[in-house]
Image 1 (tube, rainbow, N blue to C red):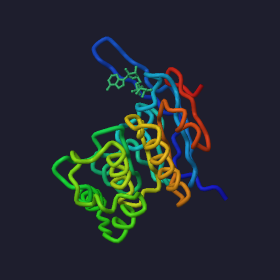
Image 2: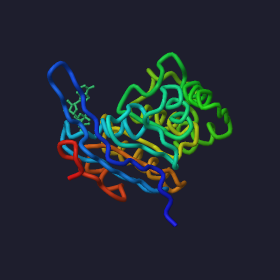
Image 3: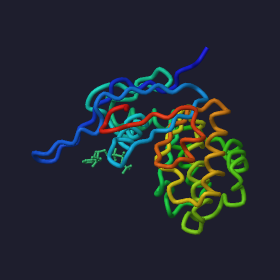
Length: 220
Ligand SMILES: Nc1ncnc2c1ncn2[C@@H]1O[C@H](COP(=O)(O)OP(=O)(O)OP(=O)(O)O)[C@@H](O)[C@H]1O
């Protein structure tokens, strides 16, 4: 039986600034199953990042509900959301994933600490699997783009998330590094992780099991 990991129902998100209102999400629903890779595509401003922030529990929708593994993560206290996020979700952004004054391993251990899930064996296995074991004690500022993308993935996977959310994770990489990082992300799905990737890249759409196209805050 297929296990639904992410269940996002009828999400609405409006940004208000003075008299102006931007309707970034207008009734978006998205289910992602265990081991499934879903790409979110759509033009700039269509709501991709807003959707990802809501499903990762980084932002609350104005309407609708987000559940991860059956647990509601939307409309909770910040402390509750942070606790659930740390345990259930791994997040990768295009940049700014790592704390600059901590090494790669320290960043990952911090993530494990926040989730109260210290696991050094899992950490070294993850670094190994991502091909960056030798960079465990490197400072983020010394990493190349491809190494940084792998390090960000290592931190996102440090707490064995059931859901991996990636916003343009390969946006700054050349084609070779993009293919290799996407391969590593796709591997996570083989281990049962549900993966959601927002991207403009055709390479991301090619590795996805399913593509959800957004236009004007709606599924097109
Ligand atoms: N914090 C914010 N305050 C006000 N408006 C916002 C905010 N974040 C996003 N928006 C607006 O919401 C809409 C959707 O933005 P979003 O970043 O989700 O789109 P996107 O599809 O990810 O775009 P891109 O591909 O350029 O990253 C846009 O009109 C954007 O200007």
